[in-house]
Amino acid sequence: MAFSTVLTSGPNLYIPKKPQSFYFPIRCLSSPSVSVSSQSRMTQFDLKTYWATLNAEINQKLEEAIPVKYPEQIYEAMRYSVLAKGAKRAPPVMCVAAYELFGGNRLAAFPTACALEMVHAASLIHDDLPCMDDDSERRGQPSNHTIYGVDMAILAGDALFPLGFQHIVSRTPTALVPEARLLRVIAEIARTVGSSGMAAGQFLDLKGGPNSVDFIQEKKYGEMSECSAVCGGLLAGAKSDEIERLRRYGRAVGVLYEVVNDVLEAKLKEKDEMEKNQKKGKSYVTLYGVEKAMELVEELQTKAKNELDGLDKYGDSVAPLYSFIDYAVNRGFNVVDLSE
Image (cartoon, rainbow, N blue to C red):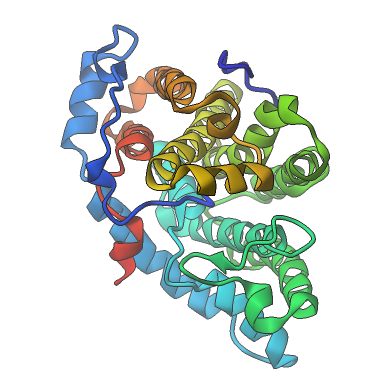
């Protein structure tokens, strides 16, 4: 990408406890490319309440979707990661917001939203394994393999992927969502997690050189956000050009989240810790520094808002999607606190 945000076809979100202590000199809100009506809409929308309400509903449905049964240990490991108190539910919330953009009843989107969270949790379980990113902590608690062992963590992740697909098919009311749309949603999720999506990003994170950072960021972080926005549009029967706008929007927001995370972590960590972190993963901050990363933050923020400007005909319904962009940068509240 080399700071040109030429994103290809294609939240691991870290939020510090005091995000307001950091200042990001982003000028995008005053940019001529962002309409006055869009700015007003973003100012008035209460994202915190919206997110908290959806979080409560999604948490309840996830609890019901993964009951403990034989073999109990696999289900306990699955629930451990999916129902973690530190989960922010960014993929399902974005899916529901994209669906509601087109005027649908959110109940029809919940099965897919829950499936996205299952798939997201599965990817995190596998990412944390010693043979992958080797992370001992996730969502404010020990990683799955730290508690249940590597073998059970692999099985839990393997089980969550197909459970997500099954949940979409068995729980989505076909009176509200035609089966043809569900097939497109399932195909979109399969593409996202497959060898041309998140798996490709993880491969290059393990084996690629410094020049692969653009692809890694897109595939490991942009793909899930892109998929979430697109699935919401597909469920609602959005037009092809609207789906592509949601695709570009979601991809930009996903990468934006991660670049801001890297900047925040760089400001919190001492230099020696940053050097250790540099050996572990590939990011814009470790390769190019905070200043260049901030240029990319501004560019991604503008790009995402420009995509939504093309959906202005839907009025206030687009406000949640606009608000996600600014939240990715400003972190006005801690999402984890919404579940407490």
